[in-house]
Image 1: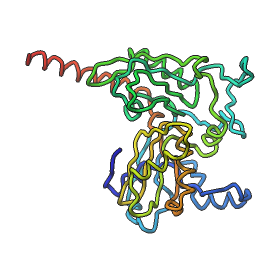
Image 2: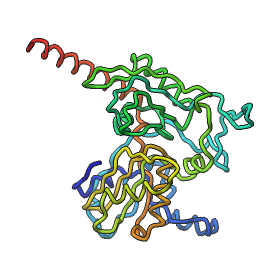
Image 3: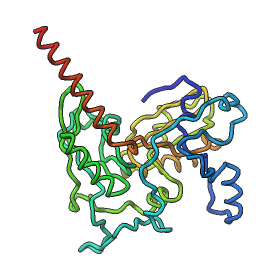
Image 4: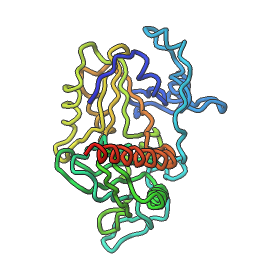
Length: 314
């Protein structure tokens, strides 16, 4: 958990426009007017991943002076991968238990990870596609983690690329984690739940929830506690939560898209947040796999050099 005092920092990572609180009771014409008001869809020459919000908040005129910040462009368009009902279309078949399964695994096991690992340590080790969830609970000294991509092809590509690199490298401890596909028996072939798939297809939902126009005095610990109360059936884990006091904006990084959706619903129902707007942020896991290879090589050299220096001191 961290704080931010730079009043511009949060708006530099926004990549989609704030969406209305509820569209269920509006007709198509009203929805079109609302989306046009918020500048959607963007012009063909401008990517939503390379611009700030098209509207300048009246209380933040300095945003007009900001230059666009380029973020990693997603390597896949998710809309064609889902039906209008939100179900994945990539070759669903029925199992012996009459449930639908995918032909290939979406899940990746990282084994032999350091015992002190938290969600915020795992995310930087994942690239190549949007992550649907990280099955992990902090502070349990677990040495294995399951990471589920939105698409099975991204999981397969990640596994192949990491194996070529020799495994996932953990800086400072020199541990190398092998990776493998999560088998069908352990849930690797399960499709995304329909409500989550629908949010990915229709809203471009990610694990990152941006909450703007927070009431003065909003605290990170209280915000996290309210989000944890979204359900009593599962443990809600965070990658990070930060509030930028200058812009009264929170960046909430969850361990899954499902809990990010639950966080939004929970906050929308709370009176304290009734004047807030919500948007989805960029998932850094959609960055290039080459980023991992380069970083691991540098970290191996740094650790090797540090080891030689320590040996010489001894």
